[in-house]
Image (cartoon, rainbow, N blue to C red; front, side):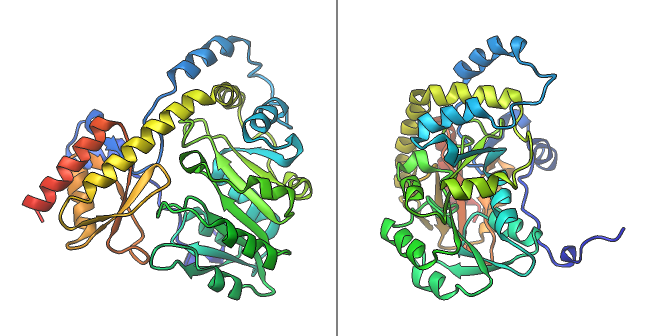
Length: 364
């Protein structure tokens, strides 16, 4: 088959290994495997699912959903405190990124990334025929704003920021965002706020002032709806009109829409789980910091980045997996000695910490 020339060098997104494959490879019971690599919530929203169950018999599943997603937009509007005309629901945060890239990136255009960051930014831009300009973060993982601004040229169409950033866990400074917005008025500045609920810091209000600011959010993390695939974009009215021209029709299904509406009406439940996760995050980071050879970094998300000061991170990652604990092995070109662990239930976190300490002491 005659495929795109791009695939001669394109690096695809690194999909997570499924449990059944891990179980087969390491001889494990799939039920014993703990996923601490996906940055998802460990709390199953059973109350919402029971509520959804009562509504399913009346859902007109034989029909397409309302293409404007009006009811869902109203719930997002109430939750995010922005006007409905500024909101575009999406099939998770990844579709939001795809929509933005399709709207702004032509073949040969450039997108600036503050790296290391979420790799799907790169994937989406390259698949559209664009070129990614990586601006390395400072030693403390702060965005190098001066270098970002210096990289802008006539081909620049998008600047991608992530706050809190995945995988480093830090947020971008408010004044830095203003600086970028003021000096890049004709360039789309995208801030991925997938982990917003864990830090409470948002730039949504700036979409009233800056037409070039676009916010991406998701219900996959704090709301625990990763399997439902619901996200949304918030932008100025003009930018939202443009992005609506690009989005695919009916990419959200009726069941996911109904579940999202139920969740958004009951944010207190999500907030309760967020508080528990934050408490666990700080406990885990404190305990990680007491383990020899480990340096744990502060985080404002639901995960922790930590550095292995001595030894092979790939080997450590594999040894943890052999024991049924899956954490994130990162792109070695950016973070050779780092790993990322998602905060889970206390019993899972304890098992991870004890196993990690044992491996470092006895096997490495």
